[in-house]
Image (cartoon, rainbow, N blue to C red; front, side):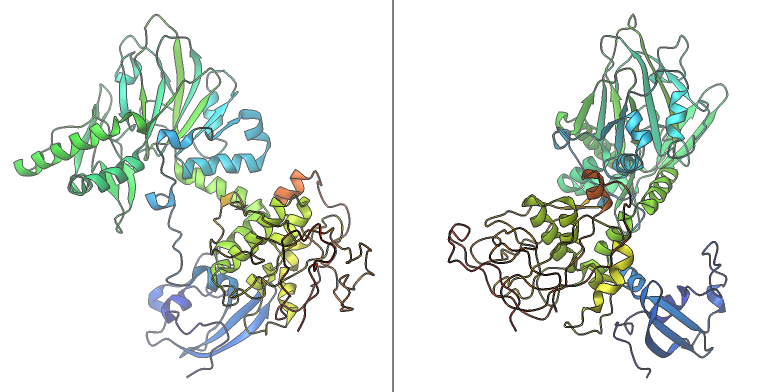
Length: 587
C-alpha cells in the first residue's frame, strides 16, 4: 500500500482522480480540454506512490499511478474544492440555488440600477447579472428611449435569440394581432414561448412609451409558487411534474409544438423550469383518469399563482428595461385603454450567455479567488473549534467593521488567516509558514502598518485571533465577493461576558506610547513583528485608495498560533485605569 500524504487522498475514487489529471499529456494546455477517452485508462487502476509537493500555486499532492506509471499532480486547493461528497455547485438553474421570494420580500431591495452605472462599472454589472440568476430579474432605468435599444441591452451579457417574431418584437396594440400580447387585454401570469424547444430562457422588455390608463406589469416567482404547491399539495405537484402538456402555436407562417410538463425537475427532483401559459395549452390525449388528475392539479396551481401576495407589481416608465428569467418568472399585465399610448420593445436571449459573462467578470475580479477559497477550503473546521475557517475570518472582519475600523484594517482582519486555506496541513500550529501561500492574494499595499492582537476567547474556544473591538459589539452578517455569508452563531463571545475586547489605537503600548518596530507594546518584552493589513477591492474602493501607489510590502505574522492569550475582563474596563488591557500571548 502506498504511503499516503498529509492530505487525505485515500478516500478519493481512483478513476475520478485519474480522469481529472491536469497534466499536459491529459489536457490541452490552451483549452483545458481532455485529450483521452475514459476507455483508454487502465481497468485495474490504482495508486502506486503518493507524496506531498509544493507547486507555484501552493501545496499539491503528487500521484504515480499503477500499472502505467503515469504521474499526476493535484493542487490541494483544487482537491478541497472538488472532493466527492462536498458541496455541489450544480448549474445554478435549480430552485435550491435560487433565492425564492414573495412580493413583500423585495420591499426596498429591488435589483435596480441606472443604465450608465451598469455600463460603466463591471462590479455593478456583475451584481445585476447575479440578480437575474439569483432572484430571476433585474431592472435597468435610464436606458435610452430609442427603438432597437433593447438589442444593445441584450448584447451587454449575451446573444439575441431570434424567433418567428424576429430579433425584436413590439408590444403594442396591433390591428391584426397573432398573439394576445399585441392587444390591450389583461394577461394573467405566464411564461413566454412554452411551445418552443428549447424555450428562450431570458426575456427583455424595454419601455418606450407608457401613457395609457392601466398596462401595469407584474412578476411572480414560479419557483416559489412550485415550492408552495409541493408543500400544500404534494400530489398535485407530482402530477404536474410527470404529465407532458402539449403547448402549441400556429399562424400563417409558423407552427410550433413542445410537449413538456408545467413544472420541470432534474433527476434529483429539484425544480428547474416552469412552463405556464393557458393561452397555448393544446388538447391532452391521455387516458381519462390522467386527464382528470392533471386538470385538478392544473387548476390548483393556477389559483395559487393568482395569490396577491405572490405578485410583484411594477409600472414601467419610459427608459426602464426589465430583464428576467423566462423559465422561472411569470409575467403579467393589467388591461389598458386603447386610446392611451403604450409601446414596449422586447427580445429574447439565453441564460448560458448571461452566466458566461458573469463568470468572466468574476474571473477578472480579484475578490473571486477569495470567494472560492471561503466556499471551498474555508468550510473546513478551525483548529477543532465549532466554527469553520471561513466563519472565523468573517467574524474577525465583521467585528472590525462594526467597531468603525478603517477599510484596510477591516481587510486585514478578514484575511488574517487566509494562509491557512492555502497552506500545508502537515505543518505544526506553531509553524507560521501558512502565511507564505497567502502572499499572492495580499500583495497590494493598504495604508499604514497595523498590528494584529490575539486574546483568548474563553473556554471552550481556544486560540481565536481577532482585532480589539468595543465591549458588547454585535457581529453583523458579513458579505464577501457579493455573497452574504452567515457568521457562526455559537453563543460564545470573544471575551466572556463582554462580546469583545477593549479598543485601543492600533500599534500603541499600554501607556499610549508607540513601541519600537517589531516589539510588543504590552510590557511583555516579547518580539511581535508587525502585520501588513491588506484590503479587498471593495474596501479599497470605499476608501478611495485607488490603484497601487507604493511597492508591495510582504506581510509578517504576529505570534505563533499555538500560544494562548489571557482573557480580558470587562465591566467598565475602558474607564478603569487598573483594568488589564489585552496582553501579549503567554505560554
